Image (cartoon, rainbow, N blue to C red; front, side, top):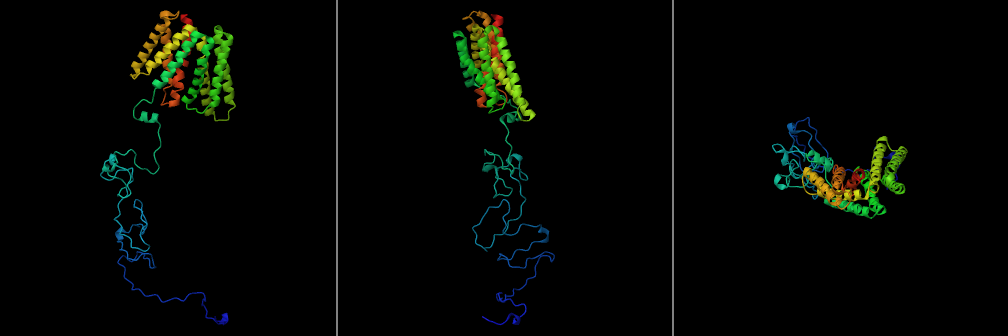
Length: 391
């Protein structure tokens, strides 16, 4: 190692710089493209000379070796291997739009190996269960919206199974009325609980435990008041409980911190649910014979309504069946043939409750709660009023 002082070294000399070996001089070729086009003079990874780009086609194509949209990926080549020649540029067609000269319905699923990004019709485009691929996806629509767009009715009726449960509960009410007033309370409480839960779910409010509990508590309070006051004071017991519960619901909703629209919606749902559950107490308030005839008519009407018939014909058959059940069961009681009017009125109110439970594509839970309870709850005022009028 040299110990000569730094002052004696050559100016500009760097002791840490590696000696440069002379580079072979490459013959310079005259480019064929226009002189105004820039040319990269340094070393690159390319080992082959590129084909000159004509001035007419110089529209900023992607660099060689970059993967363009729609081309298959391939990383198996060695570093520095020559790349395949580029395919002629073709216009890209989105996967959800038909290509030029092609029918709009003939677009199939996306295929990156084909120009335009679509498969032919024979490759499963028309028979595929999936729609065409999109960038942002498709917004989901409900069954009711799809039915309205297709011109169909968005109403689905509960069907035979909920109708059978309604008929079973109605027969329990009819048989318990013969036994006594306290025996009637057992199926009545079950009816009121299902009514409170079904109305909230029918309005899309679930879970709503506080509202359901409040409505059910109002129904139980009406039952206790009715049993304590007696059948002769039934209107005061039922209407008094209903008024107190509407005021209580209003106070509770005013203390809520939700926005005004939400509070109003919750108030209406709670009030109606409590009203329907409390009005169902009209069964023990009515005469036992009227309860027996009315509940049997509701059972027959709902079963007839669930038959696979056109809507108009099904309604007529259900009303006739309710009147016939009123005559048949009324003959076993003191009502006689007047039971036809009671059965017809109870059956008509039950069909109204059945129609309300069928609104706007309800779920299966709605069918087995509101679809079961609303026909019986809606028929309770008719049973009470007609039973007093005919008795």
